[in-house]
Image (tube, rainbow over all chains, first blue to last red; front, side, top):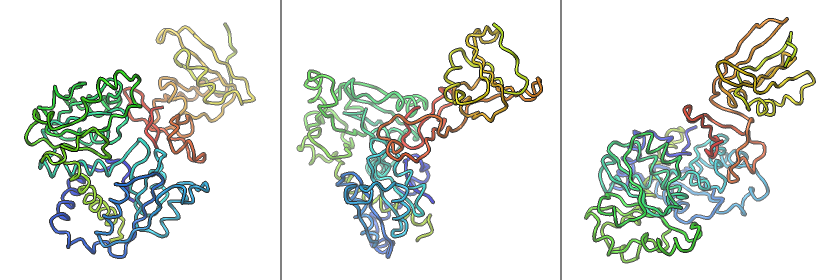
Length: 307
Length: 137
């Protein structure tokens, strides 16, 4: 049974197909409005989530399907000590496809091994969040029209941000890509991500603490939240915190066709004044997330022989 | 120093110096009833120094454990005082229930019945990662 646990489970060809389907859904929504008629999505969220759960649910509704939802671990049999494997086997009896978020890393993999229906990893701890990466890829594609020859800047917390690591891995498969890694010393990209996804593939990259030194070079700027508690000392936090807040003044030096992305939730790292800038793409990203999840649900249900 | 030769058993040879005790523990050789000798820091032309383990019984060994700890080690099977088989080990592609994932956020930390599986992800750096959470061993 085909599931999606890690974005790298998909070939670049399959990602192209998903993107093509998502673009077709955007162009012709009526064509898909009954595509999953009578099918049921179980959203098993053992951890809080706003965007991802609602995005999956909206995706299934727009495909004409139904949704059954577990919105916290406390309200499920997991609270009684049920194993992930047993939960997956049980839900397989009711639903046609599962989207699972779980605080334990590897839980969706265990679910996929035990379910008789496709399982989509909707985020497992700090590990994988493949549908966020697919969302990011669809956004890049819709804004730029291609993945090759792009200079992508990642700014903020590059150490703990799983969306950053995952997008670096996914984009490292395309030719002519360059990475610009902008973060304080404490929050640099982990060495294993650099060695496995960047250095081994010979991809050019720049590491810097200063956003303003590099902002003019970027085609994509992927912002993330810098949290005070991640710093070892207060001085560094105070010195650097403002340099990672994107505002209209900083954007004066950026390219006219820069694409500003953020996995959200935003706290204060992008000024609200940037929202009206045509280069701000983070709310478009949210919408793209729904379309790519629609495409993914369709693909997995078709491969399972359910559609 | 002399250790008696064995007539029926196993000699694990070419173990890098200091890996002998680690192998002894991971192979759980302490639980065997037969004689087991660990010879440390043996002078070797090829390796400088090496460890050797002699087991005075022909028991099944988990070769994956040996390959994980020391892929250069060799396993010699002795019967009636003669060498009947020499096994070159190499790195195993996967390890099951040999080591445990140390990541407290890994699903194996709460679900005790799951097997602890590690996959070889980089042969050059001898890197094994947890099948579930991809944490390095």
